[in-house]
Length: 295
Ligand SMILES: C[S@@+](CC[C@H](N)C(=O)[O-])C[C@H]1O[C@@H](n2cnc3c(N)ncnc32)[C@H](O)[C@@H]1O
Image (cartoon, rainbow, N blue to C red):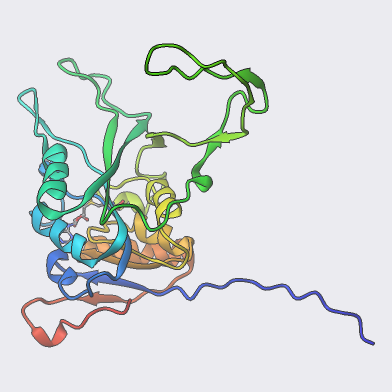
């Protein structure tokens, strides 16, 4: 009898992607309702950066379309900050959160803080040096379809030590007897996430004026996107989200209004992932071209 061979199965995900140049709201209108698992994006809010072109994003209309294309239990994450003008914050982030929840129908799952390591601005005299952005995490429906924080857990400083846990305090003020616990090797990173500044020392990526670190979408995708799911970035810029999705074996849809920025994303996919991805030009005014991109 021939010796039994050990069969090794390698999972090769059938990854498919779409890169589309066009106005995000027009493009999203061609996508099927309930077809996307996760959205990770960063809007050009408060004119904080000068982009090629002068784009105005109507966050309410965009939010409405993002809500429609998400599956129930799907997640939408924005990465944003408020402009400070004459000493006052614009409140755009907070207004967007309230609009998305009160008017559009999202629930707010959490608002994490992206703490920027090594942020410049030490010369600011009249206000604090702003070294964070907000990451509001919206859910369509009651709970996320998929939630796995294991891949983003961080090491515990006191791993494997035995400690006396805090005693639980009861409503009447009395405490239960404290018990000894062994500290786990890793823990949940909590709601404040540290990342180095956006450019990732990546020359190609830095051709775009306003990027977030690749690690932000990479972490978010691992936590909220089911294996092989579909990730959308409707303002994809240099492609940080798209690249994370591809690396993790997800399907992706990247949309940007500016062909020059989409070209950075296309070149990055080729240089960093070896993926040659065609770019579709979307023209809202010619109905025959409004076919839904492959999902
Ligand atoms: C903050 S940047 C996103 C950068 C991206 N997160 C990255 O890491 O590279 C915002 C992007 O939104 C795009 N944009 C602005 N208005 C748009 C619109 N109406 N439709 C699609 N894209 C838009 C801009 O061209 C810009 O690339």
